[in-house]
Length: 151
Ligand code: ZN
Image: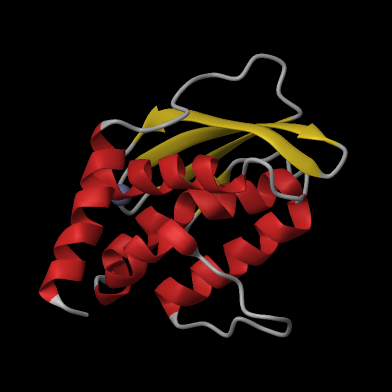
C-alpha cells in the first residue's frame, strides 16, 4: 500500500470515527442487537428496519474506539438498500479482508469504501474493533437475541 493511500484510508476512518453516520436510535426496529468487544471495551446497539429481505434503514448507538465507531458508521452506509443475503456476503468478504480467512464460494464481493479497513489487519488487537459491528449485523440477520461478544 502506498503511503498516500494509507493516509487517505486513515482520514476516512478518523472522519467516520469522529462524525459517525446514522448514529441514533431507530424507533420500532425490526432487529435490535447488541455487540460487545471486551478486549477494547467497544459496545454498540445495531438497529435495522427491513422490508421483506431488503434492509431499508440501519442505525447504531454505543461507545467505542474510533475504529469500531467508524466501522459501524460505514456498515450502516453500506448495507442500506441491500438484500440481507448481499449484506451477509459483504460481512464474509470484510471478515476475510481483515483476518485472511477464506472468502468461500461464490463471486467476489466488491467492498468499496470498506477497503479503508484493509490496513487494520496488520494490527491483530484492532481487528475485533473493526469486525464487531459486522458480527453484530450477522447476529441481527440471524435473529439471535443474545448480545454478541467477540470473545
Ligand atoms: Zn476498539
